[in-house]
Image 1 (cartoon, rainbow, N blue to C red):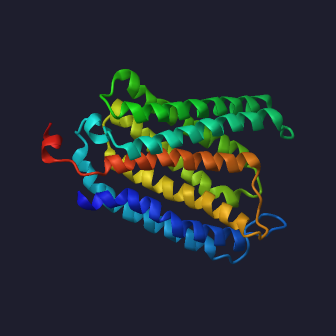
Image 2: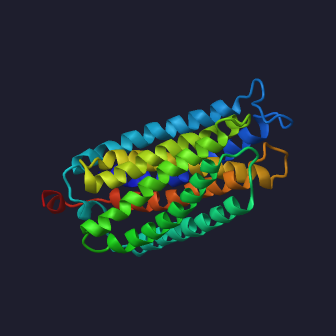
Image 3: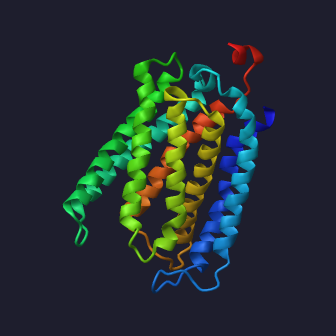
Length: 279
């Protein structure tokens, strides 16, 4: 189990080379005039190889957690850690503020030929984002005491939010000619849904902590590398395919959700005594 403690640390550390390689991909992998992928670009393969390597490492480090399948949620994720509470609250506040900001952008900016249902979907998404932030803050408190049926429901809103997040992101980008520059973010959003699904599954189904650790680590590395690389390439002042304000904000919300997942990973991957497991 000791090697599993390295998993959340690696999920954060590997974001650093991920950000650099993703930035180089953004700078060299696209035609600025059209936003389409550049012919013969190798950086997309370097970035993909880095993410695949990270996923293989995470899979290997997650395997020992299969021994905890029968451990109660309170022992798996119960914690009095101040660091966990701070991270969960920060994640929740970022989601809450981001949700309000996204609602403002939705109400004040329009899209050409956008259907009414599409705008309604974005409004619902913004509201659920705010609720997700509140639930993240609630989890910080709930995991420090005994989980009840009421507090367990706090895991369901982030799952709903992640599904809406993926749906809105896909709707906004699926017909965009610049889709190639968004592709890694969409992959991260799919894995984000799976991570929150397995978080909720700890209370509402057969617990699979190894899957939670794996998907949580992967989506963190991919999301942070994707958004960090875009931000770094913008800071360098070199022309790159520009994302809309909403696209950037949704990417930031993915990163905010990953802060909560990383906090959960540090608790999940800590060592448990034999007595705890037998109980």
